[in-house]
Image 1: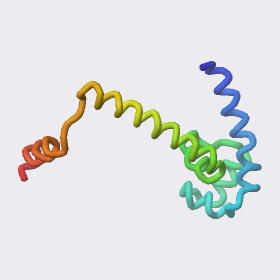
Image 2: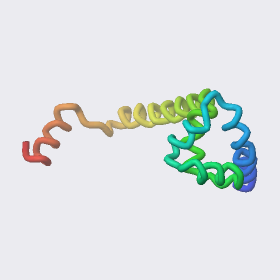
Image 3: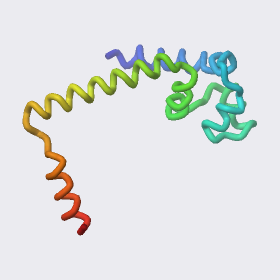
Image 4: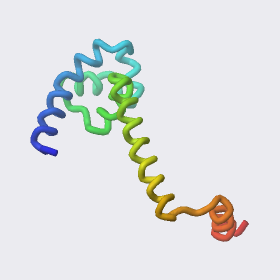
Length: 108
């Protein structure tokens, strides 16, 4: 993983974000509400291309839905692989054991 390449790719994404928002099937008001920003502040961010990475993550779900779904599936696949390996290694608890631990922990 080349950090400089990632930074430059992120910069390119931020630069085209304004166009992607304007070309999307959603109205600008939707994105303002999504991010909880007032109109003037949202347009300032658009003009200055100053969205935070957290805001870009939120926007990405709606601007790039197919890529977002692909990313989610990759994450789920990785988690399933980890879970499968943990089961093979015996690193799991049965439902009954977990329920007993919760009853004990919360005094039920």
